[in-house]
Length: 265
Image 1 (cartoon, one colour):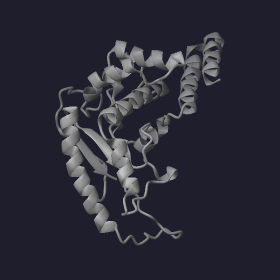
Image 2: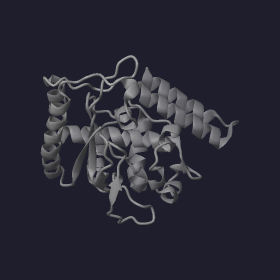
Image 3: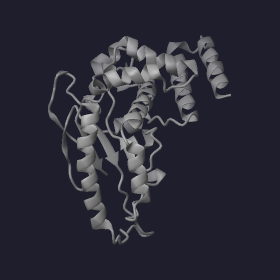
């Protein structure tokens, strides 16, 4: 039914000659978004992305040349293709790292870890397709650095109505993710500085800009009046997570062949 609705909408878009190309494109973008939502993939709104203080790191000139930006603003098609890429990157990471086991370990811990409620989740948790309670991938994904052929592969997957997570796309993602996750100055493609991440657990860590970053949510519990509820395991939780962070950063870096950092958020 979802596939049929998707193809019907595609036909409608192609027949919308009276509204002009811009209207057709906007309808197509919204149709893609609704299709993704229908299969459980959340796509952020343009407003949510533009509230991200690191929006300037997107390469606007490159994105415009590839039809991924309208003027100096990301378009919804960019975000839809980005969501397809993220779903396949999540699948790759789940295949090679023990993220599911680690998530279960947190859930089963006697320290009573608490996962965030839906309304408390940050942008990256909402976008995650890993299906985990605590762990998610934390990088921005700069898909404008993909080739036209690679972008076309994402478009074809989205427009086909078939599975969005495929061996072909995962192969492409595995070959390109190091460039797609790199936070760089658009005028300096080889930039290898350290990138300042938003505050996490009272710190603003500087992380190598080419590193894969994972987040582990460590939710605090609050009372009805907004007061922080007592947690007799708080110290033990921090010690436990600090140990996990050090162990898994080393293990995952060796497996992926690239630096991995874990943020406790």
